[in-house]
Image (cartoon, rainbow, N blue to C red; front, side, top):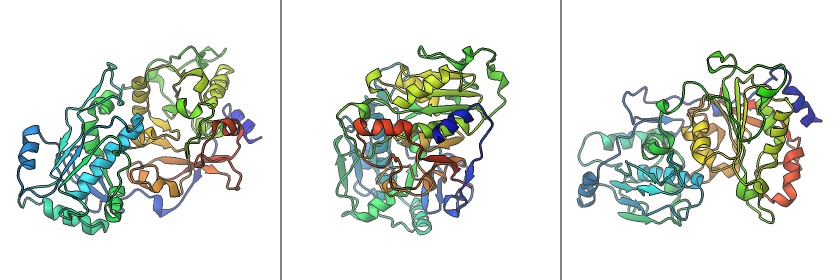
Length: 433
């Protein structure tokens, strides 16, 4: 019955959004005040956050000079490749972890692969980074050492630079272990979890994620991959881009492909139920709605097919586009440039939470911290997201022991129908106050 109610609500008015009032989810304040210039390091509720800019990027000659100078503090961290890490989301998580590790250890040279075959490009060729060398240490007394001492005091994290047993003089990480580094001490793991070098990530991934100027002023004309849109519903009229009147452009990402192969099981890769997507769509008065997925028909997430049929029947109104056959580049740009973004359960969500220009995020899990979010390089804990994102929403789950959940092991043969018919989602709740 709850599923039918959600479908009916798509025709009705804005439903109430549950507010979660907890200081744990409040947006943190930079304890060192506002700093001008790119690359400023902020301390927020025990987390080190660099939002924009990356003065740590260095040239090849600078990297060579630091590497050959034994008196220069810090070690060398070399990531040889990411070839065996997996999909693009895993590649991003590996890159993010390396930046955090480099900061925690104060390495004098971090060398990342200058090419990658997983990150998409507009031309469809191999990703190439113009900035793949970085330094997180300084030779002399120019304030860097004092800065490291300051962030160590404010966060309670130990400055690990110079501790050879924790941060060796040279560490080479191959593609097999770049996403799950073994042999890291507890102090280093804790530090990595509390450091987010978003500015340097953006510098390395510039060709992929672009910047504010990469996004159009308004969504493109409504298009589709052969699926009828809400524009064809009799008696309705679509808005022109200049006629935005509601809550902007919502982009919904639905994961398909490998996890829907028959006779395949994936630990912790269950996808959010149909009720989650319907609750998000019904939660605001959207000007535009884009629903994205990708994969062959036999590996298509069934929730996409249901939403496409609801759209065909006219339940979703006007200005709706459904895409299942576009390039990864096109879909990624849509998610990076959305006004609001509804995420799936995917490693790609880590990249989007860190670098999408969306003002509003919907998570396929609740606002409360989850034990599985404490992994080394995940950025999916709502309280962590709220440090950078002012408007974040989770889903309010029914708490019975037999409720459908995305956190358990995933068997498409037995869980797929449950994912479509589950009524475990009670509503949408706001995580940041």
